[in-house]
Image: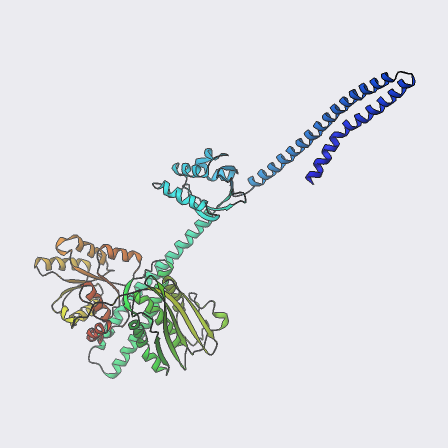
Length: 614
């Protein structure tokens, strides 16, 4: 089309010159004929040639004038159209509620709208065509345009350039005036960059209010759980101490029922507290070597009585390739298995439950465990499979449902598995059973050192200070440690603990070990630990903390104060003994010998496996 238009233009411009030549030729011919008829042939020829020349020059000039005028008119029209299009584009860009900017292939500014300049008011004078993006960002950072760039301008600029140079990027940026911008940048076909800035300050404010409300809710749940757990721990402790006395058969039955009910209530509180910590991002996983098979056997053993009472088979299958020792959070992994097995037994009336674990190497000393818990129970309806792992969600939410529970167990399992780098899913057929599968990645671990012949012999005569403001808990802890041969002194507050520590040092009979409650009125456990670390005569004292909660912040304080162990109350005897052995840096025996050594204390009713719940 362009070629044809150009040909037509040339032809039209040449038409006057052609017309002049034709006219000149005709006049010249007539003049020649007339002169010839009069006998002056040479005059006719001369006249014809002269007229042809003059008329040809005139026609050519006329053609040039016509051609020049037409082209100029077209150019003027094109310029007007381009100016109108550019104005329309600028009007459209200026009408945007968001900031717009365009950079060329060399990252130089081409154009932007006023909203863009408004957002970056501190550097508005720099925003001009030809300005390089990097120079603009660096100078704006130096002027304090961006929150978080103070003291680290070059690093901030490098990170911003990295995002800018991506083909497609979306980031959030906070300005020093408090506004938040969402920045979306895209590459154009010619290598340039087009960017949009959207003010999301209202959205961020709403998000922060929601997060604050969620934190307040989580803190409330944690505080209420602690307030309920404190007297509940007292009830459990007193019941367990009572079970260790001479009782009639009827009294034993009543106390065992009370203990079972108290532990059921404690389980509900633990679930609520776990959910609150997970939602608040305060749940931290430990990294320690543990025996996978021993942990699984412990889980199955703890549910053996419940399975037997329902007439169900409870099986454990561990593939030969599963390493004996792994590194990870044993207690949280045990919690996942325990929740799934408990859930399976709850919804199964005949048949059985099977726990299976296989493994595949991932290289670099890592192994991926493929775990499954199968049951032959009632199954999960198809319309509930997608929501069964949601918090407070249950397959049967009616008030007349057959099975109890908070609806939190599976949600906690999912979150814990995800924190371990895995995923969980369920396969189920209504009336035929369910299979819960999950995978986690762990490091291969090493076998602990050989066991000492009699671990409790190391405790004979060991001077131990037990510090707890709750009398029942203090009495129970002291009784367990004393049963292993230790010399126990009790303190009911942080002030009493500091006084007892100072008096022992003055008598040159310092305590070798302090079992210290974290949460006490007045001077709490952390304050006592800080005071101990400040005093040179006490600085080497071994401290094991006992508390009702754990989070990433507490873990950091433990490391800072050189706390050698941490257990969550109520404490099982075998877990306390194991923690003491590790804290005192004694030779670590296998779990079987730990269980045997702590058997006398466990006979008092310590809840096996309760440590690290919270």
